[in-house]
Length: 360
Picture (cartoon, rainbow, N blue to C red):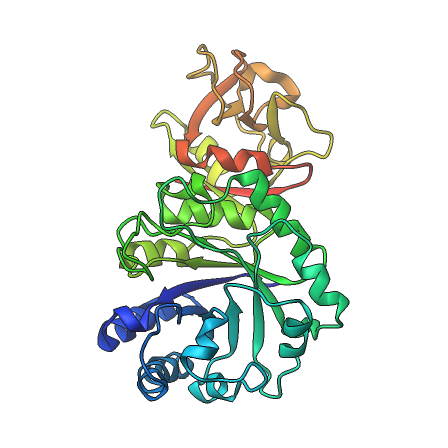
């Protein structure tokens, strides 16, 4: 399934002109979907329609997919029947995210709405919610899944729980989404905003590292910036990320010679299928590079995340690239750089035959 980037806007707490500038810039960076919150809506139907249709129309003109986040009481607030989604279709939305669920049968019926609106389910519960809905013969192509975000410090999901929740959806081939948190944005649906990530471990990481991690899990198709507004630099960084393979950010040593630099930065790497616990081995490069490689930076204890390349003392393994997974010492290897500390979490996703690259 192809992978996408998304942003969030909060029309009840924002100014249209600022929202428009934000979504326009993000579109130029390759963003394709918008999460739009209606959880804060307390005004009448006409006022809501006017405000939301304006920004949705602008988003659709930019070819965004727009999903509205709603809760069951919104139907009462706006005096809308559960069986008539025409109001949301007339706003121009592509779908509805159900922040709170119904009984399974209701969600299944909603997925057959005559407007072709996507019904996006809350993924952040490790229960058989989706299985219940599918038991009622839901219209699967119109069912998505999306995790929650968590404004309070310390309240977001732990990784193991996130994995378990997400696997419930991925095993059915359902499109999935999760949130990352800008480190500068302050906008959101509530008055508390310590960031808006899905995973607690992401809360204070650079936003592009969060996105790399979510994509690396293989469990998330759409990565959405939960808070608004992310900085232009953050949006550019996200837009430049490779969504389909890990590209480690590397601090390259100034002593790395031109051959080593080319081996690291100009090649498609993959881990050998017969793996070892001590290091990730990229062996194809040793076959392609026969140049001399004198020893340097080879007498220290290599640490987790160091990038080493076999030197002239390493015989047939000269110019093999390795990522260190366990500290060890071997003077037949030159240290050429290190993966940035924030990205060491990505090492867990370099499995047998996994493809990966480096950027400095």
